[in-house]
Length: 383
Image (cartoon, rainbow, N blue to C red; front, side, top):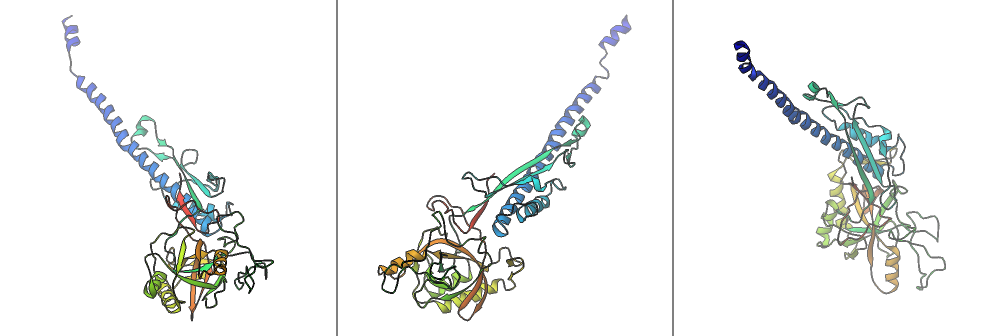
Protein backbone atom coordinates (compact mmCIF):
# COMPACT_ATOMS: atom_id res chain seq x y z
CA UNK A 1 0.00 0.00 0.00
CA UNK A 2 2.77 2.41 0.95
CA UNK A 3 4.52 1.55 -2.29
CA UNK A 4 1.37 2.38 -4.25
CA UNK A 5 1.07 5.69 -2.45
CA UNK A 6 4.70 6.49 -3.30
CA UNK A 7 4.16 5.62 -6.93
CA UNK A 8 1.01 7.75 -7.06
CA UNK A 9 2.85 10.75 -5.79
CA UNK A 10 6.09 10.11 -7.71
CA UNK A 11 6.69 12.90 -10.31
CA UNK A 12 9.94 11.59 -11.73
CA UNK A 13 9.88 11.44 -15.59
CA UNK A 14 7.35 14.29 -15.97
CA UNK A 15 10.08 16.39 -17.52
CA UNK A 16 10.11 14.01 -20.51
CA UNK A 17 6.43 14.72 -21.08
CA UNK A 18 7.06 18.44 -21.15
CA UNK A 19 10.11 17.94 -23.35
CA UNK A 20 8.02 15.91 -25.79
CA UNK A 21 5.25 18.49 -25.84
CA UNK A 22 7.78 21.27 -26.26
CA UNK A 23 9.42 19.41 -29.10
CA UNK A 24 6.07 19.14 -30.87
CA UNK A 25 5.49 22.85 -30.40
CA UNK A 26 9.01 23.59 -31.63
CA UNK A 27 8.53 21.48 -34.74
CA UNK A 28 5.19 23.13 -35.43
CA UNK A 29 6.74 26.57 -35.09
CA UNK A 30 9.64 25.48 -37.30
CA UNK A 31 7.20 24.24 -39.92
CA UNK A 32 5.47 27.61 -39.91
CA UNK A 33 8.70 29.57 -39.96
CA UNK A 34 10.55 27.46 -42.52
CA UNK A 35 8.00 25.75 -44.77
CA UNK A 36 5.38 28.48 -44.85
CA UNK A 37 8.05 31.09 -45.49
CA UNK A 38 9.56 28.91 -48.20
CA UNK A 39 6.15 28.40 -49.84
CA UNK A 40 5.47 32.14 -49.75
CA UNK A 41 8.82 32.69 -51.49
CA UNK A 42 7.91 30.03 -54.05
CA UNK A 43 4.55 31.71 -54.64
CA UNK A 44 6.23 35.07 -55.26
CA UNK A 45 8.71 33.46 -57.63
CA UNK A 46 5.88 31.74 -59.49
CA UNK A 47 4.14 35.09 -59.86
CA UNK A 48 7.32 36.59 -61.25
CA UNK A 49 7.46 33.76 -63.79
CA UNK A 50 3.84 34.31 -64.82
CA UNK A 51 4.34 38.09 -65.05
CA UNK A 52 7.44 37.67 -67.20
CA UNK A 53 5.64 35.26 -69.50
CA UNK A 54 2.60 37.49 -69.95
CA UNK A 55 4.73 40.56 -70.70
CA UNK A 56 6.89 38.58 -73.13
CA UNK A 57 3.78 37.36 -74.93
CA UNK A 58 2.33 40.86 -75.20
CA UNK A 59 5.68 42.23 -76.39
CA UNK A 60 5.87 39.58 -79.10
CA UNK A 61 2.37 40.54 -80.24
CA UNK A 62 3.51 44.14 -80.69
CA UNK A 63 6.92 43.58 -82.28
CA UNK A 64 6.59 40.23 -84.07
CA UNK A 65 3.05 39.23 -85.06
CA UNK A 66 -0.08 40.56 -83.41
CA UNK A 67 -2.43 38.07 -85.05
CA UNK A 68 -0.49 34.80 -84.69
CA UNK A 69 -1.96 33.00 -81.68
CA UNK A 70 -0.82 29.49 -82.66
CA UNK A 71 1.28 27.21 -80.44
CA UNK A 72 4.33 27.88 -82.61
CA UNK A 73 3.66 31.61 -82.95
CA UNK A 74 5.90 34.23 -81.32
CA UNK A 75 3.39 35.23 -78.64
CA UNK A 76 3.10 31.73 -77.17
CA UNK A 77 6.70 30.67 -77.65
CA UNK A 78 8.06 33.85 -76.06
CA UNK A 79 5.59 33.59 -73.17
CA UNK A 80 6.61 29.98 -72.46
CA UNK A 81 10.35 30.73 -72.71
CA UNK A 82 10.19 33.79 -70.47
CA UNK A 83 8.17 31.95 -67.83
CA UNK A 84 10.60 29.02 -67.71
CA UNK A 85 13.55 31.40 -67.49
CA UNK A 86 12.23 32.48 -64.07
CA UNK A 87 12.74 29.48 -61.80
CA UNK A 88 10.77 28.65 -58.67
CA UNK A 89 12.97 27.35 -55.85
CA UNK A 90 15.72 26.66 -58.40
CA UNK A 91 13.49 24.49 -60.62
CA UNK A 92 11.53 25.18 -63.80
CA UNK A 93 7.85 25.91 -63.67
CA UNK A 94 5.53 23.89 -65.87
CA UNK A 95 3.95 26.00 -68.59
CA UNK A 96 2.59 24.53 -71.79
CA UNK A 97 1.39 26.32 -74.95
CA UNK A 98 -2.15 25.53 -73.78
CA UNK A 99 -1.43 27.52 -70.60
CA UNK A 100 -1.03 30.67 -72.72
CA UNK A 101 -4.42 32.06 -73.70
CA UNK A 102 -5.70 35.28 -75.23
CA UNK A 103 -8.71 36.70 -73.37
CA UNK A 104 -10.53 39.77 -74.66
CA UNK A 105 -10.14 43.12 -72.95
CA UNK A 106 -13.18 44.91 -71.47
CA UNK A 107 -13.91 46.53 -74.84
CA UNK A 108 -14.01 43.14 -76.54
CA UNK A 109 -10.65 43.51 -78.32
CA UNK A 110 -8.10 40.62 -78.44
CA UNK A 111 -5.30 42.61 -76.83
CA UNK A 112 -4.46 40.41 -73.84
CA UNK A 113 -2.17 37.48 -73.05
CA UNK A 114 -2.83 35.29 -70.01
CA UNK A 115 -0.20 32.88 -68.68
CA UNK A 116 -0.67 30.18 -66.01
CA UNK A 117 2.41 28.55 -64.45
CA UNK A 118 2.55 25.51 -62.19
CA UNK A 119 4.67 23.60 -59.74
CA UNK A 120 2.15 20.96 -58.74
CA UNK A 121 1.84 17.25 -58.20
CA UNK A 122 -0.34 16.81 -61.28
CA UNK A 123 2.43 18.39 -63.39
CA UNK A 124 5.08 16.25 -61.71
CA UNK A 125 7.01 19.13 -60.17
CA UNK A 126 5.58 20.00 -56.73
CA UNK A 127 7.59 22.01 -54.22
CA UNK A 128 9.27 19.83 -51.58
CA UNK A 129 8.76 20.71 -47.91
CA UNK A 130 11.45 20.51 -45.21
CA UNK A 131 9.82 20.18 -41.80
CA UNK A 132 6.24 19.43 -42.79
CA UNK A 133 7.34 16.12 -44.30
CA UNK A 134 7.73 14.78 -40.74
CA UNK A 135 3.99 15.36 -40.33
CA UNK A 136 3.14 13.57 -43.57
CA UNK A 137 3.10 16.64 -45.85
CA UNK A 138 6.00 15.99 -48.21
CA UNK A 139 5.11 18.39 -51.03
CA UNK A 140 2.97 21.43 -51.76
CA UNK A 141 1.34 22.74 -54.95
CA UNK A 142 2.18 26.25 -56.17
CA UNK A 143 0.68 28.11 -59.11
CA UNK A 144 0.29 31.64 -60.43
CA UNK A 145 -1.44 33.51 -63.23
CA UNK A 146 -0.80 36.85 -64.92
CA UNK A 147 -2.39 38.82 -67.73
CA UNK A 148 -0.67 41.47 -69.84
CA UNK A 149 -2.16 43.78 -72.43
CA UNK A 150 -0.89 45.28 -75.68
CA UNK A 151 -3.45 47.99 -76.23
CA UNK A 152 -3.47 51.31 -78.12
CA UNK A 153 -1.34 54.02 -76.47
CA UNK A 154 -2.60 57.55 -75.84
CA UNK A 155 0.79 59.26 -75.35
CA UNK A 156 4.42 59.12 -76.46
CA UNK A 157 7.82 60.30 -75.38
CA UNK A 158 11.18 60.59 -77.21
CA UNK A 159 9.26 62.10 -80.14
CA UNK A 160 11.43 63.45 -82.97
CA UNK A 161 11.18 67.12 -84.06
CA UNK A 162 10.10 66.43 -87.62
CA UNK A 163 6.77 65.15 -88.89
CA UNK A 164 5.43 63.42 -91.99
CA UNK A 165 1.82 63.03 -93.19
CA UNK A 166 -0.25 60.05 -92.15
CA UNK A 167 -1.23 57.54 -94.81
CA UNK A 168 -4.36 58.11 -96.89
CA UNK A 169 -6.44 56.35 -99.57
CA UNK A 170 -4.96 57.37 -102.93
CA UNK A 171 -7.67 58.16 -105.49
CA UNK A 172 -5.62 59.91 -108.20
CA UNK A 173 -3.04 57.18 -108.90
CA UNK A 174 -4.10 54.16 -106.85
CA UNK A 175 -2.91 52.22 -105.00
CA UNK A 176 -1.13 54.37 -102.39
CA UNK A 177 2.65 54.25 -102.38
CA UNK A 178 5.44 56.39 -100.86
CA UNK A 179 5.77 58.45 -104.08
CA UNK A 180 2.16 59.71 -104.08
CA UNK A 181 0.97 63.19 -103.11
CA UNK A 182 -2.16 64.03 -101.16
CA UNK A 183 -4.60 65.92 -103.40
CA UNK A 184 -7.86 67.57 -102.35
CA UNK A 185 -7.98 70.69 -104.52
CA UNK A 186 -7.05 71.66 -108.04
CA UNK A 187 -4.72 74.56 -108.89
CA UNK A 188 -7.65 76.99 -108.67
CA UNK A 189 -8.51 75.89 -105.14
CA UNK A 190 -11.61 73.93 -106.11
CA UNK A 191 -12.35 70.56 -104.54
CA UNK A 192 -11.42 67.73 -106.87
CA UNK A 193 -14.16 65.50 -108.23
CA UNK A 194 -12.37 62.46 -106.83
CA UNK A 195 -10.16 63.73 -103.98
CA UNK A 196 -7.84 61.58 -101.90
CA UNK A 197 -9.42 60.34 -98.66
CA UNK A 198 -8.03 60.56 -95.16
CA UNK A 199 -9.80 59.14 -92.08
CA UNK A 200 -8.30 59.92 -88.68
CA UNK A 201 -7.17 57.38 -86.07
CA UNK A 202 -10.07 58.43 -83.85
CA UNK A 203 -12.64 57.35 -86.44
CA UNK A 204 -13.88 54.06 -87.80
CA UNK A 205 -12.14 53.05 -91.03
CA UNK A 206 -8.80 54.67 -90.15
CA UNK A 207 -6.67 54.96 -93.29
CA UNK A 208 -3.29 55.62 -91.64
CA UNK A 209 -0.20 53.53 -91.07
CA UNK A 210 -0.56 50.07 -89.54
CA UNK A 211 2.19 48.38 -87.52
CA UNK A 212 1.29 44.98 -88.95
CA UNK A 213 0.48 45.85 -92.58
CA UNK A 214 3.28 48.37 -93.13
CA UNK A 215 6.05 46.76 -91.07
CA UNK A 216 9.31 46.83 -93.03
CA UNK A 217 8.13 49.40 -95.59
CA UNK A 218 11.11 51.51 -96.69
CA UNK A 219 10.66 55.27 -96.88
CA UNK A 220 13.22 57.92 -97.78
CA UNK A 221 12.56 61.18 -95.96
CA UNK A 222 13.38 64.46 -97.67
CA UNK A 223 13.15 68.09 -96.74
CA UNK A 224 10.01 69.61 -98.30
CA UNK A 225 10.80 72.60 -100.49
CA UNK A 226 7.57 72.58 -102.49
CA UNK A 227 4.77 72.60 -99.93
CA UNK A 228 3.40 69.34 -101.30
CA UNK A 229 2.09 66.63 -99.01
CA UNK A 230 3.93 63.38 -99.72
CA UNK A 231 4.94 60.47 -97.48
CA UNK A 232 8.61 61.28 -98.04
CA UNK A 233 8.47 65.01 -97.22
CA UNK A 234 9.13 65.96 -93.61
CA UNK A 235 8.37 69.22 -91.83
CA UNK A 236 10.55 70.38 -88.90
CA UNK A 237 8.61 71.44 -85.80
CA UNK A 238 9.50 72.76 -82.37
CA UNK A 239 9.01 70.40 -79.42
CA UNK A 240 7.57 72.40 -76.48
CA UNK A 241 10.42 73.96 -74.54
CA UNK A 242 12.79 73.71 -77.50
CA UNK A 243 13.64 76.00 -80.37
CA UNK A 244 16.36 76.68 -82.91
CA UNK A 245 18.82 74.52 -84.80
CA UNK A 246 20.86 73.38 -81.79
CA UNK A 247 17.85 72.08 -79.85
CA UNK A 248 16.41 70.58 -83.01
CA UNK A 249 19.60 68.62 -83.74
CA UNK A 250 19.92 67.45 -80.10
CA UNK A 251 16.32 66.24 -80.07
CA UNK A 252 17.03 64.05 -83.11
CA UNK A 253 20.18 62.49 -81.68
CA UNK A 254 18.74 62.03 -78.19
CA UNK A 255 15.49 61.39 -76.33
CA UNK A 256 13.44 64.43 -75.39
CA UNK A 257 11.40 63.31 -72.37
CA UNK A 258 8.44 65.60 -73.13
CA UNK A 259 5.26 63.50 -73.12
CA UNK A 260 3.08 64.16 -76.15
CA UNK A 261 -0.58 63.29 -76.62
CA UNK A 262 -2.68 62.89 -79.75
CA UNK A 263 -4.23 65.85 -81.54
CA UNK A 264 -1.41 68.20 -80.52
CA UNK A 265 -0.84 71.34 -82.59
CA UNK A 266 2.79 71.36 -83.75
CA UNK A 267 4.53 74.68 -84.33
CA UNK A 268 6.74 74.58 -87.47
CA UNK A 269 10.41 75.49 -87.24
CA UNK A 270 11.43 78.18 -89.76
CA UNK A 271 13.48 76.89 -92.69
CA UNK A 272 14.07 73.32 -93.80
CA UNK A 273 16.60 72.48 -91.05
CA UNK A 274 18.64 70.34 -93.48
CA UNK A 275 21.95 70.95 -91.68
CA UNK A 276 20.66 70.28 -88.14
CA UNK A 277 18.76 67.23 -89.42
CA UNK A 278 21.92 65.76 -90.93
CA UNK A 279 23.96 66.50 -87.80
CA UNK A 280 21.34 65.01 -85.50
CA UNK A 281 20.98 61.86 -87.62
CA UNK A 282 24.73 61.28 -87.65
CA UNK A 283 24.76 61.52 -83.85
CA UNK A 284 21.81 59.15 -83.60
CA UNK A 285 23.33 56.49 -85.86
CA UNK A 286 26.62 56.73 -83.96
CA UNK A 287 24.82 55.65 -80.77
CA UNK A 288 24.20 52.20 -82.26
CA UNK A 289 26.34 51.85 -85.40
CA UNK A 290 25.97 48.07 -85.67
CA UNK A 291 22.17 47.99 -85.86
CA UNK A 292 20.61 46.88 -89.14
CA UNK A 293 17.35 45.75 -90.70
CA UNK A 294 17.16 42.00 -91.26
CA UNK A 295 15.22 41.43 -94.49
CA UNK A 296 14.56 37.77 -93.76
CA UNK A 297 13.20 38.33 -90.25
CA UNK A 298 11.69 41.71 -91.16
CA UNK A 299 12.95 43.30 -87.96
CA UNK A 300 15.72 45.36 -86.40
CA UNK A 301 18.82 43.47 -85.26
CA UNK A 302 20.81 45.19 -82.53
CA UNK A 303 22.71 44.46 -79.34
CA UNK A 304 20.72 47.25 -77.69
CA UNK A 305 17.09 46.65 -76.76
CA UNK A 306 15.53 48.77 -77.97
CA UNK A 307 17.96 50.32 -80.40
CA UNK A 308 18.10 54.14 -80.10
CA UNK A 309 17.83 54.16 -83.89
CA UNK A 310 14.19 53.06 -83.56
CA UNK A 311 12.60 56.48 -83.31
CA UNK A 312 9.12 57.93 -82.95
CA UNK A 313 7.96 60.27 -85.71
CA UNK A 314 4.71 62.21 -85.23
CA UNK A 315 2.23 61.90 -88.09
CA UNK A 316 0.15 64.94 -89.08
CA UNK A 317 -3.35 65.09 -90.52
CA UNK A 318 -2.91 65.72 -94.29
CA UNK A 319 -6.49 66.88 -94.78
CA UNK A 320 -6.28 69.35 -91.91
CA UNK A 321 -3.03 70.72 -93.33
CA UNK A 322 -4.32 71.00 -96.91
CA UNK A 323 -7.59 72.61 -95.83
CA UNK A 324 -5.61 75.12 -93.77
CA UNK A 325 -3.55 76.11 -96.80
CA UNK A 326 -6.72 76.76 -98.78
CA UNK A 327 -7.85 79.08 -95.98
CA UNK A 328 -4.62 81.10 -96.16
CA UNK A 329 -2.97 79.46 -93.16
CA UNK A 330 0.69 78.63 -93.68
CA UNK A 331 1.20 75.28 -91.95
CA UNK A 332 -1.38 73.67 -89.69
CA UNK A 333 0.37 70.59 -88.36
CA UNK A 334 -1.83 68.52 -86.05
CA UNK A 335 -0.51 65.21 -84.73
CA UNK A 336 -2.90 62.31 -85.27
CA UNK A 337 -0.60 59.35 -84.64
CA UNK A 338 3.01 58.31 -84.01
CA UNK A 339 5.07 56.13 -86.32
CA UNK A 340 7.82 53.71 -85.31
CA UNK A 341 10.74 54.19 -87.69
CA UNK A 342 14.16 52.52 -87.81
CA UNK A 343 16.82 54.89 -89.15
CA UNK A 344 18.87 52.86 -91.64
CA UNK A 345 21.17 55.45 -93.14
CA UNK A 346 21.75 59.08 -94.05
CA UNK A 347 22.53 59.78 -97.73
CA UNK A 348 23.33 63.43 -98.25
CA UNK A 349 20.23 65.26 -97.02
CA UNK A 350 17.96 62.22 -97.23
CA UNK A 351 17.11 59.84 -94.39
CA UNK A 352 16.19 56.25 -95.25
CA UNK A 353 14.44 53.97 -92.81
CA UNK A 354 11.90 51.23 -92.18
CA UNK A 355 8.50 51.31 -90.53
CA UNK A 356 8.57 49.23 -87.38
CA UNK A 357 6.29 48.65 -84.37
CA UNK A 358 6.91 50.78 -81.32
CA UNK A 359 5.71 50.84 -77.71
CA UNK A 360 3.82 53.81 -76.30
CA UNK A 361 2.39 55.09 -73.03
CA UNK A 362 -0.97 55.06 -71.28
CA UNK A 363 -1.51 58.32 -69.43
CA UNK A 364 -4.44 59.50 -67.37
CA UNK A 365 -5.89 62.96 -66.89
CA UNK A 366 -5.23 65.41 -69.69
CA UNK A 367 -4.44 62.89 -72.41
CA UNK A 368 -7.86 61.50 -73.23
CA UNK A 369 -8.70 58.01 -74.47
CA UNK A 370 -6.36 56.10 -76.73
CA UNK A 371 -7.41 56.26 -80.40
CA UNK A 372 -8.55 52.90 -81.69
CA UNK A 373 -6.15 53.26 -84.61
CA UNK A 374 -3.13 54.26 -82.52
CA UNK A 375 0.07 52.91 -84.12
CA UNK A 376 2.05 52.62 -80.85
CA UNK A 377 0.93 50.03 -78.30
CA UNK A 378 1.13 50.19 -74.55
CA UNK A 379 2.46 46.97 -72.98
CA UNK A 380 1.44 46.53 -69.34
CA UNK A 381 0.35 44.02 -66.73
CA UNK A 382 -3.36 44.21 -65.95
CA UNK A 383 -3.67 41.24 -63.59
